[in-house]
Length: 467
Image (cartoon, rainbow, N blue to C red; front, side, top):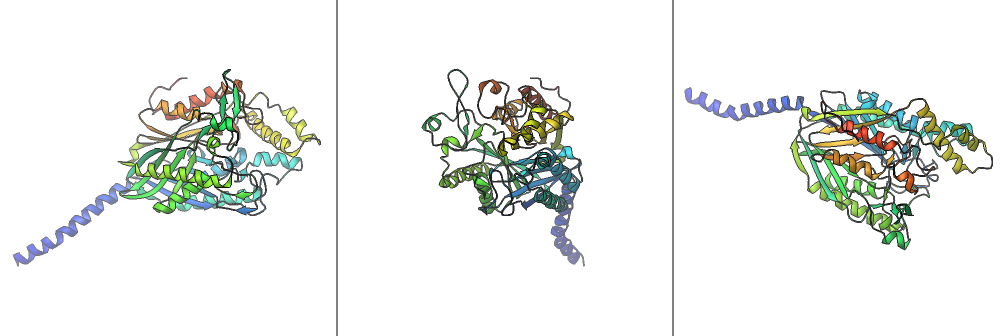
């Protein structure tokens, strides 16, 4: 009888150990961060307006991809959309709907565009102005946008319900070769001599140096033990090879992202960094063949960053969300009476009226005290920074200098209303980015935005960084 009892105990020990381990893991997981992933096809219907034409074909699909992060605080939502811009009341609608779906507040929702130029625009404020002057439906498909917002919100709600526990955070980075180049080539007098856009065949533009860029693609991943849940990629450049004829495409960054997702079987999300003054112009002649070449270079860097990934344990205590709302100063050239006169001018072409409407939309928003949300998510020694507009590369590099011991990953192109956001000196140097057409903020924006970035990257209880 004693021998039988001992044999039963010996048999039950492995089972008992397994039960103890399972209970321990359940306890650990119940106290862990959780991440849910969502993805919705946001390609427009044929005939719907995209950035510069009506959609005539879908070369490859556009997506809204993102994550919902659950912890002992209110949920955080990070979303990247394959559109050219989401601005003003359009941005409000996205954040409000996603916040409601996630059960959180709008200040903890960050919606960015990847900024492909064969993607859609979403701006209910500007569209309302255009409607008043008989130009409604020309640049925006409001019904389609609202339908997509609801679809993404439903996906966010489902992602929250299916979120998985996260035990580790991964980080890796790799240099991207022969993709990014600075668009502003200065002459000996310190003024912009050459504007190098997304593509060029000009020999002087091609021969000029890359200029100031951030060559690193950064890869952040969430893991449940050894199982990856989601991958976030960050890189700063305009994501265009060729565009403008209505052939809808996520272009070379989206193609690379989707290829990586198929290769590793893990959701991949791509955020465009502060690439307002960065594009592939030095390495892109605008031919259709270059798209595949640029996509291959991006895909290679994404793969190398993934292979360089190092995992570290992640717990709820490692997470902190910080945000600050600031008002960006409107550009001096935004004068309501002048903009209204342009919209009423029957001799003025539609494109100039479109620019006037965008200017007026942003001006009216700022007059009513509208503020933009600057935010950062701390995950251990990784910081995910979210900033508005087509911010120039100096903002991304400045953010990294603020936290030299951490990995700062910048996502720009959130609130698209202000257009290009340059450094103060750029407004005296000329060039496209700081022109009256492109930028709707004043030179004083530099101090305001850098101060806000310092505030959200500063740990709680640490004296604020001054600039």
